[in-house]
Length: 100
Image 1: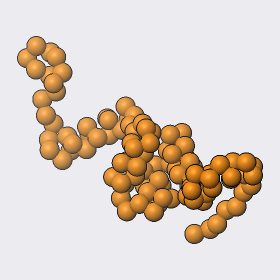
Image 2: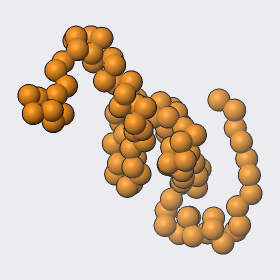
Image 3: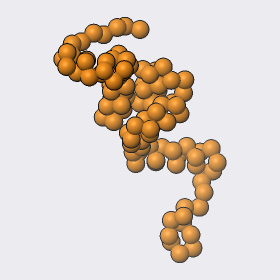
């Protein structure tokens, strides 16, 4: 793993240290949550960055911090196609034309 260094204002470092925060870990967590929120990182990226074992652990970590799950309409359609391929096309409308 490549190390990256950068400067932060001394005042911010002091605030983090006073709260007994690990400065490096605090930066990793900020990068992970904001990268995911902005759509630059996926769950596997968050898990890798934070040393979590699974993407489910990453989902839990993000949820505990109030970061919304990135799930687009395209993701939904992809999941529906996969389910239809695996389990066969299910009836999508009832007799009254209302989707189930």
